[in-house]
Structure formats: structure tokens, C-alpha cells
Image (cartoon, rainbow, N blue to C red; front, top):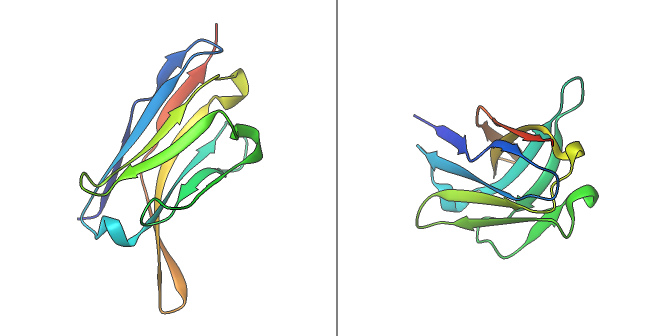
Amino acid sequence: QVQLVESGGGLVQPGGSLRLSCAASGFTFSSYSMSWYRQAPGKERLLVAAIDSTGGATDYAESVKGRFKISRDNTKNTVYLQMGSLKPDDTAVYYCNAEVWVEGKPDHYWGQGTQVTVSS
């Protein structure tokens, strides 16, 4: 059974830090690109950060560049999102996503999300 389980969310004050984790199982983790998305109430789900299957290339949304870092450990089937200098606008549900291209089309798996709230 394919599973992506996010953890590490919670309440943090502006300027604080959090580290999110996504534990994967049920598929060949090392073959998939991984990414983090977030969705605030009433807003679209947007890409925050992405990392290729080996961890050799990353991509970030402009709003989080310099503050967030995505990484992965293929020996643990886990992807991480280290978030620093957090702002109230970072408040959202954060989702883990796995992607692989099969027969010219992307295959996606989604986690259930973890809530991050940045507030004083």
C-alpha cells in the first residue's frame, strides 16, 4: 500500500523554525522526485519546494527562497523540509508529493498533510 505520512507541523512564532518530515512506503522511493506543496484556506495548492530522485537538484517557490531547504534520505525513504524565518503568510497545510514519469505521463502520490501555523 502506497503511503506518504507527513509530520512535524505545529504552532510556531514568527521568526521561528520547523522541520517537516514525510515518510514514504509502498513504492520505490529512490525513483521518484519529491516535493512539498502548501494550501492556505480558500487558496490554491502551490508548490513550495521540489527535489529530484537523487537529491542533486532542487527548486523553490520565490516566496521561500533562502528560508526553506528541502532534502531527502533515500536510505530512510524520507523527505524533509527545513523551514526558517517563518512568517504568518507561511501558515498552511503542507503536503508531501511523490512524482515519477511513466509512459510519458506523471504519476503522483499525495500525503494527507500537516498543519503549520505561524502566529504570536
